[in-house]
Image (cartoon, rainbow, N blue to C red; front, side, top):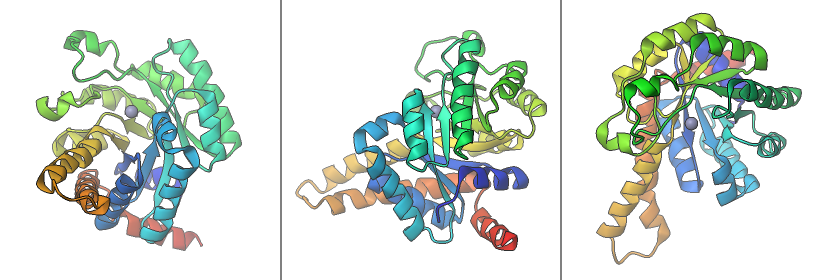
Length: 300
Ligand SMILES: [Zn+2]
């Protein structure tokens, strides 16, 4: 079933788990994500980026996600979100196309400019009944050769996080607490999270769901501590792409004579499905779909 990110975050806030947010680029990844969510009986956010919209087209990818959500996840809530919106035009287009939530990422700008751009997007989103996520602090790539000390200056400052939320009115906030991007961490392992920093941020803005980007390759124990510290959305990009593509490489080698795309792609869908189900269990959200539906029914 298709729901809004607002509904999912309210449920996650109330029950103290994190919603899994997975990036899709096509039909097959969307099928894998939704089947994984059904297996774990967990609510899920499916998100796309501006480059995915360029790749697949806004309406095609929107309709793929919405149609599969309505037909293949009848009892599991699914919401659609724009990940890392960087310009106002694409944000407005997504809102007009029916997204229930957008991210405005102006985190690479100086604080004041980040506030101005974020507030503009938040105001537009709210006018249309859509939620907006902002980001303060900067995420770097795992393979960037920045010493740990230098990396700290890119992390989210708790005081700035509080003033940023007040100044912009964002509904959720992406934080940089040692989380990093990139495929390098799949081999090297993810660097540790600064949980003290997370606790300080959460302590200042307890009602604002915090979002952990770059969460691929984090161990279940690190995830559990982050969820205890107020993380309510966990984004998985690298690991899901890795699951899909590495399985595809393997299948192409194993079935070198096969030309039916369905036979080539089905194992990749399964890999995504398994990964998503496992992640949703790690995030503490397994079984939450049933509770969500019961709550919705009670509200009439
Ligand atoms: Zn991100």
